[in-house]
Image 1 (spheres, rainbow, N blue to C red):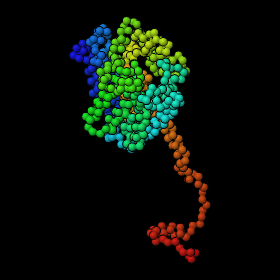
Image 2: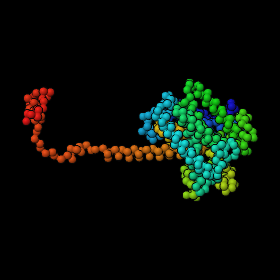
Image 3: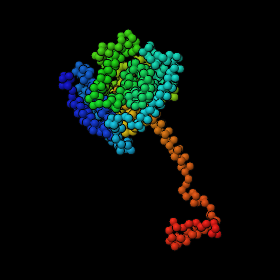
Image 4: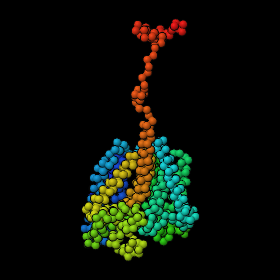
Length: 514
């Protein structure tokens, strides 16, 4: 470790100072909703870039691969990213969330006062009913597509189960529908965990746990780590920070234990996923998590990729595509049946990294390579504009999460917020809709629900206005009454008023008076 630190350039220490200062500023601004997501973005930069040189043997790997100018230049790009992010995020938050700035962070309020508020629990119960309906509908489709093997889909540990949402590496036709179904199932599975952690209604909590037992094995036994995290971690974090009672040290102890368990499971997955399915690995080798604790986690090398990008741009073997990759990410949801020539993502950089020669199914490459969220900006807009543009995208992401935080008491905001927090770390590899699909689908569902609720409210308001009588209606429509001969009672009252006789002494005359 000391050898690594002695070799790191000045620009590395500037990054460390900015990350620490930004973290302090973010903690200070927890109350306005932007602090926590800002802190996670800074932590993501630290994990994927600073963690790369500390975890992947910087003296014997990075220093041997790249020139010192490339290493220093990459750190200055990380510095530029962090500066733009820290400056742009508060400004963007004040601009886009101006109407909600009078509120305080909903997560902090739930942390302080608990989750037993009746309004919040009612929203949680409604959310569970909606997600359970979506999940059951998806299971019916899965049962049809798996041709009766749905039991192995629900309980993949019983045997190698079918994948109803499976597709090729490059989708064709309307494969986007099955991709959407997969991510919707991932979203509602994560929400089941949040409901099970926070619901105070015993019946709702029990049903949520049952749905978790049916829904989570399919994702936990996947090969992709980001999918496992999106399915399980929102519920775990909800329980630790919002439901678990006790002092803060108790929560951190539980959090560390959960982290060690998740890390051990990921080590088991990494050690076996290239040879066989996770289900087969469990059956053949048993669930010996301790044996895989020393497995090296692959993919934590975004600083290395940033150095490769700079090297290729410097020697002329790669040129920035001026937004083409961001455009390919943006139009990715469009089915190829509607757009057969839809652009592919990251093929040009994969060829530059030596992955050319793959078959047609791989679009001419053996594999695509993640560029990292900063490197992705560089391959799009160059070494100066690229990091700044990537920082603006992450500032927009923080603003979206902050808005959810400030509206946390509304239907569905809390689970979606925790889902976004978890996916923030995965954005360190690439800012892509492929990672954000669960969040995007959930956000669109909430937007549609809000629009439908607003429309119903407007219809109800118009109906009440039509049924309510107009002011002065009787006065304008009343016909003049004919003059009538005053009776004896009214005559006496008039005379008594003229003589100032108390009204209590006035009596109606008897019938014999006339």
